[in-house]
Image 1 (cartoon, helix red, strand yellow):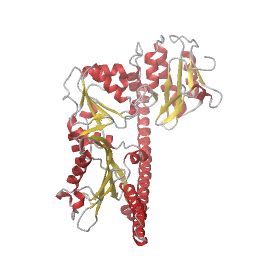
Image 2: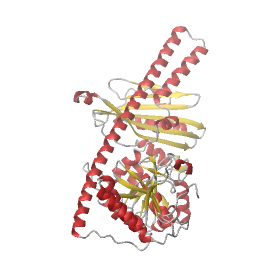
Image 3: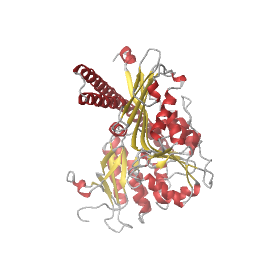
Length: 538
């Protein structure tokens, strides 16, 4: 594609989407007025506003001296859809704000707002934002998100009971939105001592994110309930995405920003860490089909209204000419709906392609870093300063692995859990087996050659271990459910190989280390140790 064609292409993407339940007397009309007060502010340049617009009736504004605005009102079911299309400071971008209000009862509505950005030229990251009127609704009205009241202040978790409430909410299957938890310094019970101010984050993510501050004592209780690897403490910030399961998930599924990272934050675009956190949180938009079930696109509502108008006219016996005009309106609305769908599908393809490019770049950077680490390791070996201290227990194996194995051997979260809970007595064997994988197995797989094969096999014999495939029969591992599989980089990966030590079924003495070789990153991933997994014999 030449440069001229690229510069003329329009890229679409969803910037944000909010879905709230709102309660109150006359709430349907109240929310209509809030939206129109925002949309018809003189600064927005919406002109020639018809009188019926303020009354919640259908209207359309499409003139040369005004931004485009239109609304569709349905009587059955009672639904009001609104759309505003405008250009702001950046003329290369067009912003579309769609609002849907559906009446559930006389004092309850489902409220939705979707912001779509169309930009000309390269598919740059879409700015993420939520309109100001959503913030007003979330803070001033009786609104709930995932069943919890929305608020302008954070949910404070500071004792055993509130920790229990938080954990129940985190693991709830029907939670659809992220929970961002801010912690305070160890020993502090002051919710204001977070690494970054929480209020600006709440204001920027109102109606989409649950913001929580957990105090120091509560952090210890949270750790006891969901484990250290999924907890948050010492001014760190963690995002718990929907579907949280501390028994199955990876730590990377629920990103953590340490206090050191936040304090040392530097961005070439002059973004603050709060700006970055807002962008990263709002970009986790749920699948499009799910979003559209909750809030149908404006054009779809317009097509439904056109169909209802034609059917009503037909039932009232209007003339053929009048019915043809209404049929043309219906066809026009349906065509526009199809066009909008096509543009959004193309946007999804663009995002997928961009993700592939980013993944390739990450892999390239990783391989470069890996080569640099290997070079440094060779220099350390040559200097005789490459000795690694062997801990006396398995309690700190996670930090030890991060320091000494990173880039060569990765201990999967499931392996960290099993090893930390085991009563295995030969602690030294666990650490020596992992170092052997780092120093001998990984080079053997990356470089090859008889010399490296011999070195690995010699060390295996010294440790009293064998290296073998878990099963000789293909697909045999599936017989044991998920025992021999771990989730890794979005895929289920089979633990195809294992190091075999003593065959004792006593967890204090029997040893196994189950792993697979990840060809893309050229490293070992350990999924289970030091005990046995099920086999036909057991």
